[in-house]
Image 1 (cartoon, rainbow, N blue to C red):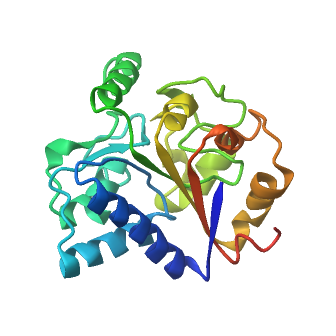
Image 2: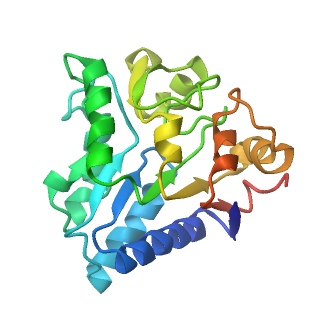
Length: 242
């Protein structure tokens, strides 16, 4: 793992955007795996700023999102489909037909999972996958004790994950209990992984990942130890216990 220290969240966002942009410049038809949540918002903002100033083109980029809530329509304010449009896709020149997010409203969810894996395979796999990490070590929505061999699947979200996401909803009862997520094996097949970690509330998680280094399905992010090309960008607050 390559560790890059950022001064703060803003600096982390700049460094992460630069990393992604460099990969797109080197490979204009990059297959880019994307994440949602608070952590990548700043990165997407920096990518938009770069697009507006430097005209970095996303014309041939294909994107694959990690996950989506089950039961939320695309136009729901809390869907990841809406999140990605509002925070990135509406502001760059990527064709919407080249953006892909699981359908949490699919009638046959297992079929949707299988089709999503086939889609990734048809694109030649993911070249660069952006990740965040949950307090319990989850990546995507792969909760503790998820098998490292899983592919795209339906997951029941833990109480801790649902409460962590409650801030995006009016009430905890509105937070979906299930999600479609890329599996750990699917994530590990990405050629490169970029993991972003920010804030002092993640310092114990970072300590477990970088200092304890115990590979266990109890801590899903430990699966990354087996990947040959992982870059971690973390700010000083997140790294304070390392």
